[in-house]
Image (cartoon, rainbow, N blue to C red; front, side, top):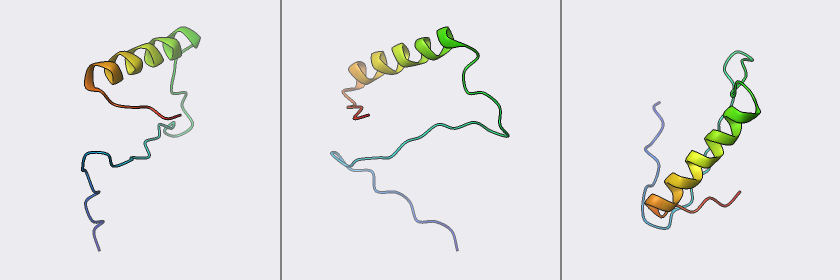
Length: 53
């Protein structure tokens, strides 16, 4: 049985995670990780998305 669509309404919390595939690293190095965090922060400001953790 297919999974039902997630609720997507204003104010709804979403649990989003990122993880490796087949044991491969997500980031190449520390600078790559820092760049990701900076881009994520910029996008959250632009879209008004709150990141809680």
